[in-house]
Length: 461
Image: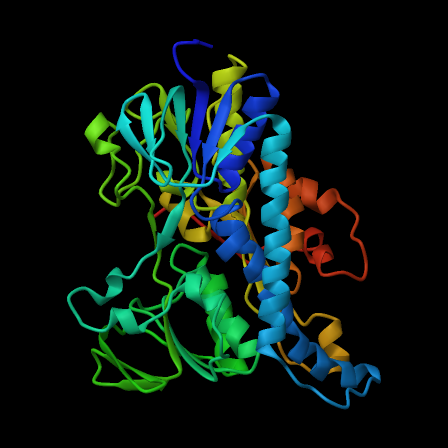
């Protein structure tokens, strides 16, 4: 690398993508620095995936206690303490954040705990220290932030919380209204409901989980409502007001929803504001995302971007994958395009949704003739617990080649199962491969290899 600059690579943002790229590049002998203004681990570690999953675990215990009775257990007292949960969560997040920073420093990268903004195409200005640093290449991995734009010009957004604040609430909200229909809104609806809150989910569209398979959307809606979560669709907030400790959300259907908290979970926006990117010639999209090519390279060939700031697939493992592809491309001289095909994802509701590949509608829209297989069944555990809740597994198969195009699961442990289905689909698995696999009995996953009867076939519209 050129000695003209202080560093071979300067990374802005210490989330999953930035940490992985800086560590790998430093291990290869590059002179690397990374700037992070809040804490290492980014959204995922500090106010996203990890704390969310910890809260998801906490929300399951109430139901587990109920189910235990059918298996002969007596639970004499059930009492939940929000402050204990949050304190323990904060302790674990601090441990992980420290481990991230230690890994970067151990690899040999220099760490700056402050905000970095571009001054020119090869120089960043560190806001706290005032230092100016030059680098041959830059990687922007600043992630995203919760959006508040659902309010439009209507007043009261300042009275609402987002997922960022939800992880640090001092008091548990006994009544909460959540605006949104995506996985963040749904997951928090189930978290708060599982912990004992009265939850209303308000979505502007006709059906929650836009973009997911229709059967999964319907199954989750029915299940959520059966649990006691109020799902209200085709609604927009017109204003939010606060009086004392109470918050009032008004909708365009002349309704007033009273709550302890109103949460906006209506999407995320890329973190590029005030970074000076446009002034140096980096092209941004309408949402402020950095436009990149298949190698994560921006309109300036020495500036790259990975993760949520590019607004491609906003998933932590995707950011890590993009970071590794970037390092191979730049530091191994091995051009590696990013692969976004058959990426598994999950919704940590109760029960979960796990999905990989094409939905039924997406497969038809792409011109496939498809065969659809379904298994609708009552999980064995529910027979003794007394729960009527059913699971739904679905395979979307190319009718011509027999290749599995999509797998969609609604049921317990769906996220654990879908990870390994993704491996099979990445290898090009066919329905015949699934059928030839001996079932592991008794398990939920065995349903995937015992769906021999075709539910229906469809051709492209």
